[in-house]
Image 1: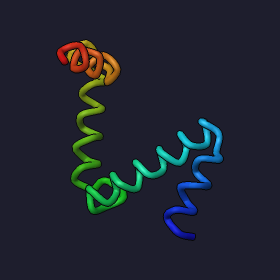
Image 2: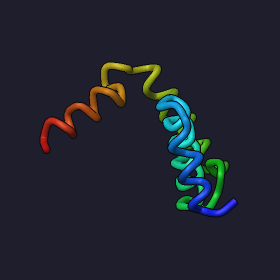
Image 3: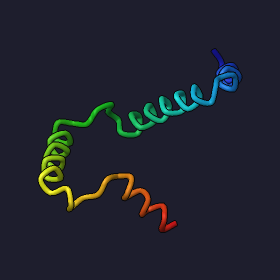
Image 4: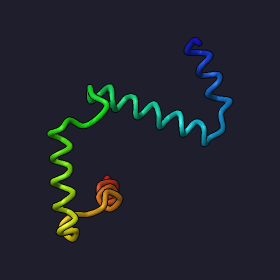
Length: 75
């Protein structure tokens, strides 16, 4: 299937289906950019330690939605 055919078919999808395709493309791009599809063992260990630390003291951290809102508010 050519690129033009893909674009034509994409236009026929519902908005929800287009969102699904977009999310899949973003995930593929993220994998390509990182060079690996999953975190390394070291990264997983770090994430596990950080998660444990946050669970012990949740008041020290903030949910991503709060952090994102603060970042966007500064724009």
